Length: 267
Image (cartoon, rainbow, N blue to C red):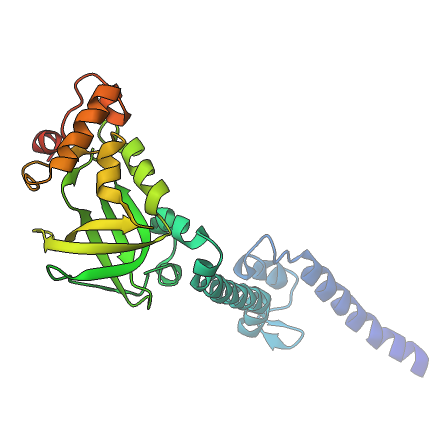
């Protein structure tokens, strides 16, 4: 009698356990939110509790694995950014990779851009007759670049004295920019500042390994002699004339538009 009574009382509990197990197995947490699963529990006759636990606690238990996964992903992402930042901070020692990344910096997070060459440097204001020395980290077109001081704490935007190159969107602009980049990008230069322009840029004569870069750009046919601002520079005038006759660079095109005229119609 006692054994039959124990068997009779254990059968309902076993049935309930089977029902609970089946209901829990039917929950697909990876595909459905927990809220859509609880009606199955109620339908199974379990009321507002599961194994004695309130549904709110079960809901928290269901979302706990996802919260843990999110935290782990956040930790890995933060570690990745720190490692990437440390790598970029030292890229100036790894040839010109860091300088090349400046060309696509607008696609990078701000926290990463600060580690690029010059990313945390202040904008410097040069004075006439000042001598600037440092590395060219960016070339915008055939007559404008950015210089970063050896300490890495100050950068200057340099406008090349006595020449005017095609704008980046102008015919010949890309070739002019590439020619200047080949000469000075990632290299140490010396700039003799003549004055500053209306945009605060240092207008100067740029030298790399003793070579007068302004003159070379005119000589190779990648820039005009900017007569309006450098009238007393006969060597520029002679270099432009020779490049025209040899049809070098931009002079290979028929009647190239001077950049000062291009700017008037493309403001």
